[in-house]
Each structure stands twice: as C-alpha cells, then as structure tokens.
Length: 311
Length: 325
Image (tube, rainbow over all chains, first blue to last red; front, side, top):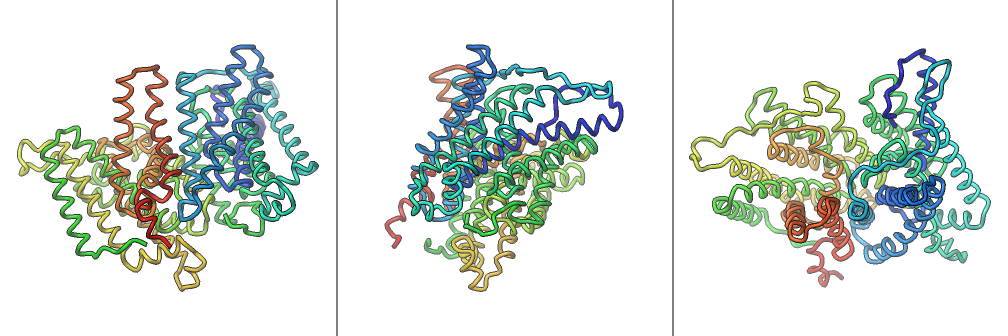
C-alpha cells in the first residue's frame, strides 16, 4: 500500500528501486494473508467470504482491546489469531452451514453465499460500531516504523515492514507444513479435491470445512494485526484489503495456496511499481488491469487446477 | 416458469401504473416525490442486476461502476456538449451499453467468482479513474443539471415533481422494454443459459454471444439509472458510486427475487425505506453515535440474510412453491 508518510527527496534511482521492491514485498505479504483466507474458504466451501474483512477487523479490535488492557502487542497478536480462528469456525458452523442447507437450487445458489457473507460483513461492522464506536483507533507498532537508511538515504522500509515480512513468511511455512506434512493437511486437501471421495474414505468433511474456515479466520486476524499499525482502526478499515486479497486470489486461480501468494506478490509489485514510476493515481486501476490481463490469458487464473470440479 | 403476460396486456398495465403514479405525484409533498424518484432509480438499477444475474447467470459486483459510466456520459453530454437533458440520459444508457459490450467480451470468458472478482476490481478502480482526467472534474465532479421544469406545466410544478416525472417515466419505459424483451425468444434463451449452460449450448444457443448481449443491455440499463441518480443529486463525482452501492443494489435484487421483474419496485422501496426507518427508530430510542450511524447498515444486512434464508428465490417463489413438481 502507499505509505502515508512523505518520502524524503528521491536521491538516486537505485534507492527508489530498492524501496519499490521492498514495499512491494511487504504490501504483497499482507495481500497474501487475505488471499490465503479467501482461498482456504473457497477451497473448502465454494464461498467467496466477503465477511472476511469484517472478521479480520473484529479480531483486530479484540487485539486492540487486549493492548489497551495489558499493553502487550505480542499477546494481542496471539489473542487476535486465536479469536480469528474461533470466529471463523463459529461462522461456518452456525451461519453458513444452515444457509447451505436451505439454499439448494436455482441461480440463487451462485449468489446466496455472496449475499449472505456481504450481509454478515455489514452486521459485523455494525456490531463493531455498537461496541467500539466509529472513531479511528490506532495500534502502536511493536517495533520502529522509521525507514532504514540505505546509502545515506532514508527509504520507506522500516523494521516494522521487515517484521511483517518475517511474520508472513513464518505463517506460510506453518501452513505449508500443516498442509503437506500432517494428516489434518491431507484431510483438508482431500476434502477440497473431492468431498464425496473424502467422505467415503472416512474423513469428516463438514468438520474439515469448518477447520478451513478457522485457519482462514486466523490468517485474517494476523493480516489485521500486521496491517492496522501505521493506519487507523475503524469498522471498514480492511474492506479494500479484502478486495485486493480477492483480486490476488483470483489471479492465483482461487484453488492453490501457492497461487494466492504468487498472485498477491504479482499484485504488490505491479501496484507499487506503477505508483512509483508512473502515477500515484494508478493505485486502483493497476489492480484491475493486472487482473484483466491475467484472466484474458488464463480465464481461471494462473495456478488453477486443471480438472474443473464445477464451481 | 411463470405464465407469460401478453405484450398488449403488459403495456396496458404499465400505462395504468404510470397513470397511478401521475395522480399520486399530484397529491404528495416534495419530500415524497424526491424519495419516489430514488425508488424509481434504484428499481431500474435492480432491473439491470436481475437481467444479468437472474436471467443470464452472470454475477456482477460492479454495477455501480457501470452506473458511473452512464452518469459521466450523461453529464458530459449535458454540461460540456450543451445538449438537451433527454439526450443526456439517452447517451448515459448508450455509452454505458457500449462500455458493457466491451466488458462483456471479457466477462463472457469468465465464470462465477472470476467474473465477480473482475467486476469488483472494476467497481473500485473505475471511479478513481475520473480523477485522472480534468474534463471529468476530479473529486469535485461535474454538475448534472436537467434544468427547470418546462414553463407550460405552470408555476406550481416543483423541481422535485420534475425529477419524479423524469425518473419514473424513464424507469417505466426501460422496465417495460426489458420485460418485453424477456418474454420473447431472448428471455427463453437467457433462462436456458442460466439454468444449464451446457444444455443451452447443445440446443444451438450461442452462449458466448448471448452472455455478451445480456451484459451490454444490463450495462445500458445500469447506465441510465446512473444518469438518473446523479440527476437527483445534481452532480456526478467518484464518491457518488461507492462499492457499497453495488452491494446494496445486489441486496435489493435478492429482496426483489432474482427470477422476475415484478418486484423491482419493492427492491427500490426497501433501499429507500430502510435508512428512513432506521432514522426514525434511532430518534425514538436514542443511543450512542456509533449505534445511530451503524443501525441502517445493520438493518439492511439483516434483511439481506433473512431474504436469503427465508425466500431464497424471491418473495414470489413462496407463493408459487406448490405449483412446482
């Protein structure tokens, strides 16, 4: 994203270039967390979860409250991730599943999950407004947000950006281990690949789906706690992040976790480079142009599964 | 699935409804006329969504962007080219339709979530493009002035009544046109496409072309409603078309029922009435600032979820359910 503080005088082209790369990486990392949250839910339940923006912001508010009480960002981070997982699981079990039981046929099947999650988004944001009010809150970053010095110039990349990158890298690593090395991961992949066969093999598909929502919720909670410091916290704070996460997920093909990360990085680089080198105003249009270009070449995204399983 | 009404009968119905509106318009105040204009405008926008999603099975989250295209086209026609407002509204529909045709060529290749993602990205990026070009007036936007009502209507004829006449008439004509279109061969092929694209293709329907056609017509309708919307708020700017407008309209379409156009006015009414209801509710019970400002959003969202859960196929479906099978 565009960092809010003013950049110091553009020294050399080199500093500018390095800055662009580093900011691309750190914004791409945040998009990646949201994209992962979208993909995890899509894989397990065929729902584009627009409520994710609300879930993530709600968990960030919970984190904010923890910081207010204890003063510890790290404790808040842990609480936010865990509560994100719980909220995700609760939403799937007590909201999405009953709706899917009722809505089975007609074109509404395509639109019902979208409308239901949009409605849920509105409700979550309203509840946040009821509880915490609408004024902007802020979360202090745990480490310095002042830019590093490269060749005597201060660049728009700070210890905090580095922390974001490291945190996201660790999260990716944990997810990869979970999916590739554990039985739970195998169950998750099997249920996403073919629910019927997975069920026949004795996997509790419904429980696994709820688990998918929980992991997605945790990912969103992490995204919120990493994104909000440096910005403000308000009920709609993560709406745009959700859109970018969704766009990144679509670029990556919606199916693959790797695709989500790759799509997010492509988006991060495209946006930061076009805003650095062409015009600040290209922030949003770049996202659209990249998406359309990718979809014109590959209508199902870059890393879509070869076999269509019917959306 | 629903019994067909003949074109003549439908035309008579629309004329009768228009007559009722005309009589009603003389008997209510300016505020009601103004709200009525919004109802007509939203109903038209919802029509464009029903045509696209309910009939051709394409889910668009970017209807607000297409409305913006129409609004800017109309405003430029009136403000910069100095042409008659009616031509402005016509251009709103035409330019948005052509834009939708181009977009539809891309969209036809995409399925479900991919199209949703693309249109969503369009909805957030297109309005910001207006800031790029000075002729579009950047953040302040440009005025959209339909002018005073013609003198021959007399002194008592208020500006709001003029708004109401224009928006109600434009919406009636457009919905009448779409309703007729959908009762022809096109309507049947659209439904075939929606219900089973593969079977439709095997029956010799050119699925790609049909999707593009639907997208273009829907965009034209959305463009006209965009033009009407900025007429009501007297100017067009990027902030007039937030993403939340797309979502609200989608909600209106679900409340209306995606299958048919009969309830579009209900959808429009709901979108206009909810904030009013929330306002009066809040003034009665009071509450914190957060509560007051978020209540309308809460009500709309709750209504959306209730609509999906209890009448997933529209209110009409509840009545018709026993006819099925």
